[in-house]
Each structure stands twice: as structure tokens, then as C-alpha cells.
Image (cartoon, protein in one colour):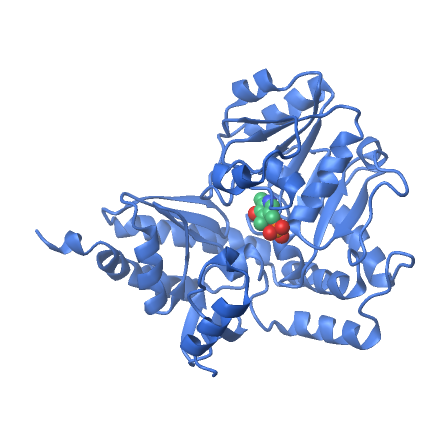
Amino acid sequence: MTGSEDLLSRYENAVLGVFGRPSLVLSHGDGAWVWDVDGNRYLDLVGGIAVNALGHNHPALVAAVSKQVSEAVHVSNLFTTPAQIALAERLLAITDAPPGSRVFLANSGTEAIEAAVKLARRTGRTGIVAAENAFHGRTTGALALTHKAAYREPFEPLLPGVTHVPYGDSDALAAAVTPETSAVVLEPIQGEAGVVVPPAGYLRDAREITRAAGALLVLDEIQTGIGRTGSWFAFQEAGIVPDAVTVAKGLGGGVPIGALVALGSDAAALLAPGQHGTTFGGNPLAASAALAVLDTIEREGLMDHATEAGRHLADRVDALGHPLVTEVRGRGLLRAIGLAEPVAAPLATAARDAGFIVNPVAPSAIRLAPPLVVGVDELDLFVDALPGLLDTALPDQETP
Ligand SMILES: *Cc1c(COP(=O)(O)O)cnc(C)c1O
């Protein structure tokens, strides 16, 4: 029982069905490539959903994790470790954190958001403003901030006090923020919504609106952060300093980790001893993995590479001039290809059958969030194949 078909039927009889039936059973990867258990090779253009920043089997991550495993995997937060301290310092450095800033280490994105929600609650206010189509996670606190009805409604009532406003609309945001607003929580680019880039100036407006109202600005950089959009964090490109940033996905390069960075002493002082905690968060294994990821991104120049490779990809897809492609949006190596017809799902299937992993993030868009180490030549393999894949996804195209 080792082929994909056998394994997938065992999966369906053992794993809770919340993810549906996976399309592949993967065994291992190398760089931007993964292999399934039947020996087929795929170019991984999704990178574990913006997680495998260094790709698969990167020697720096393998070495750091292997060394740490042989020393200490976990010590609890009754104690600390050199790795935990170094990671917190490093996160403060890469967020350009002002004096007094502090880091809380967790195990996932949704936990980073939970910490942000608790931070917001400590302002003494209960309102939170988030955006329509936002995704902030699946625990019941984070779920209250997530917008999609299908995710939320089966679990209501959720955390009260959350208002959703149209994303990218500064006037709507200004109108929704009141003296009861504890925090505005926004993704700098909406990821799960289909890689939606807000108008220029939106984050600056959000900063001004929250500052004037005495509310926190929390930026969810779980998908955009850690070099993916070409700088450590997307907020740095907007030239603002939020009150808190949530980080996860790419941070551990695949090892589970999340973080809340409270920027400035006012925000950092909101959570007092005993008011929040975690068993696994900040463990030396995850911290060592994250340190290796951050060091490697810097050493290998992967932020500049993300900018250049992402632009190359967008330019080349645009240059195809294919009638089914409406646009390439996003920044760096967080991209979506907009489609004129709702054929993202058949396109993803055709791509997979041709050896490319892409994500049908919306009915009319596929998302690409490849490892930051992906080569331009590897991206070209996909662009070269794309016209044929689009024709397979929309067979009517061929009939005159
Ligand atoms: C993935 C994601 C989350 C949730 O992270 P998990 O690790 O899945 O809990 C939250 N916010 C954004 C923007 C994300 O992309």
C-alpha cells in the first residue's frame, strides 16, 4: 500500500475530511521541486502556500534544525534558550522596531492573530475593524476577523465587536473607526482573497486613521512577510510603522512558528505577565529554523531576487498576450494570474498533470507563491507551458 491511490484511500479513512481529497501524495523535495510517491516530479509554484521560503531540503535549514535537534528541541517557557532570544532580537531588527518593542513567539499564523486580538482587548476597547475578503485564520478569535461566510457561519456566535469594511477604501475605513475601536487589522496585500493589492496610500491612510482615533494598527504579514514581496515586510514599502505585525508562514521555512511583534513600548506594554502564554511557542527547534531562514534570505539576496523574479514572471505572462489572462497582480513572488473565465480549477489540474503545482485561489485566479529560491529559468518553464495549459483548461478556445 504505497502508491498514491492506495495512500489516498487510507487518507480518506483516517484523516478528518476538512481538506477534501488531496490531489497528490508527496514524498520529498529539493529546491523548487517536489516528488510524489509514484516518482513524478513537479515544479512547486505554491511553496506550501508561501511557507517554503527556502524551498525544499535547503542545506542551511537542514543543518540548523539537525544541530538543534541534537541539542534541545523543547524546554518550555519556564526557561529560555539562546535561539529564542536571538530570534526575538532578529525579528525586532527586521521590523525596524522602535525602542520598547517586544516579540511573542507562537506556533502558527492564527495564534499570532489571537495574540494580536488579546493585545487589542487590553486597550480597554472591544471593537475591531477588519476588511471584507480578509483571511486571518481559523481559531474562533481569528475566525471572527476572517470574512468568508462559509468559514464563519457554521461557528457563530464568534467574538463580538468585529466590523468588516471594503478593502482598499480609505473613506469606508475612516467611517468605521470609532472611539470604541481597539484595532484595525489588515493584510498589506490580501492573500487568500486572491492576491489583492490595495490602492497606493491605503496603508498610510490606515495609519493616520488609527492614530487619530487612538486605535492600534495591526498588519497581518503572515503571507506577505519574510521577504516574499521584496522587502522583509510589505509595510516597509508603504513607509509606515504599525503598532503590531503578525508573522508566520515563511518564517520557519516549513517548521511551524508564528510571531506577534508589538512595535513601540505602548503596544508592547499592553500584555502583562500571565495574560498570555503557550507551551510550544518559542521552542528552540522552531527558533533555530527561523534564524536559518532569515540568515539565508539575507545571505543569498532573496528579497532582491523575489522582486526581480516576480517582475520577470509578470512581464513574461503579460507578453503572452493570451486572451484568457486578464492581468498578473501582486508583488515580488506573491502573484495571481487573473483569468477571463472561471477556469482556475481545471487550469490547476492541467498544470499538475504537466508537472506544475499552482493554486486555484479563486474561481478566476491562480496564485503563485513559489519558494524564494526559485530560478528565473524555472519560472520560464511554467510561462512557456502556460498557453497550452490554458487551452487544455478551456477546450472551446480551440474551436474557431
Ligand atoms: C495563512 C494565513 C493566516 C493563518 O495562518 P495559519 O498558520 O494557517 O494559522 C492568517 N493570516 C494570513 C494573512 C494568512 O495568509
